[in-house]
Length: 103
Image (cartoon, rainbow, N blue to C red):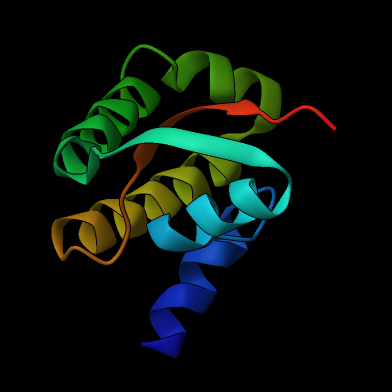
């Protein structure tokens, strides 16, 4: 829903996402020939959980020292939102292989 997307985008540094098909079309619109595409969304939730684990364990002290505990809390809340969305199949990731056509 719209509230979910707004929350996810607010957390991101560059708040823009596209569908997997949309990214393929963007590449093709820029002159790339996509020769292979893989939807690797099934691994995205575990990737997000690992990121949150690192954030709250090995990186915790560094983040708090450099940016303060408020930022750490906000980052953890943000990544938790991404985990929830990934587990619900609302967000994912892909891998594209292609080349830029000669102009």
